[in-house]
Image (cartoon, rainbow, N blue to C red; front, side, top):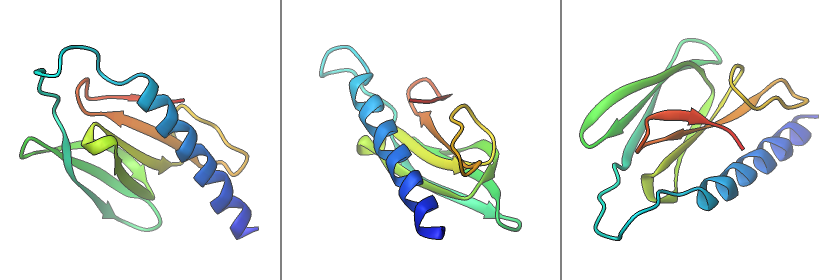
Length: 107
């Protein structure tokens, strides 16, 4: 059962990575896109607050996170949570934090 949850989370993360790559920032190559350089989770129990460092400034993204990964060269941060836009059978959700809009989206 634990492996099934891990497989479902992996599928969700891959799907979100594909979506994020398809909807990357438009514009010239000279446009500087803010990049995430670090993620930190302040764990309380099985969940914790997610902090993302962008251009040297740490920003709190959400309160309920289990894991987080920087993807697409720092343009996105994917994280697993029990609240957010993507519902899965395991009741765990995968979300994308977009650094240039500083908003949360889903695939």
